[in-house]
Image (cartoon, rainbow, N blue to C red; front, side, top):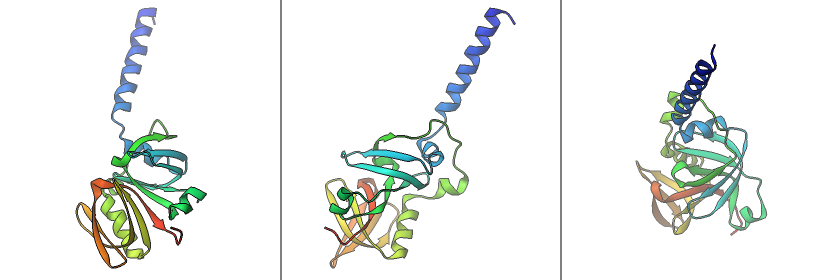
Length: 169
């Protein structure tokens, strides 16, 4: 192979690799990062650190270490983060296969319905507010939380994180 042919071949390989990488979604990268430590900064500056335990097309779940700051805010150790709330994701893998058809269909609503079925108290950290209580209903694009008798609807688009509530305040 001549020098010019080799350079052309290497350029084509780089171009194909770039094209394949451009097709990989954030959801696929997060799914490939299952079991890996990550640091997520959500759009309001809140930081979530831990290990990716589960993910789907619209969300990921991170097991946190239960730090003092977590307990002070009343957060449990598992945190649900919608992809649209991520400002910066540190520590993901750089290559990943696309998620399968089931994983692509699991929306944030599916994850919130699972939390509702558990009946556990949650803290929803949303733009401008923290909402604490039990999830009593999940619509197409919102969740209803009942906390101390007051029901509040939170649009999915406003949700930054969802965590199990602890007894701490």
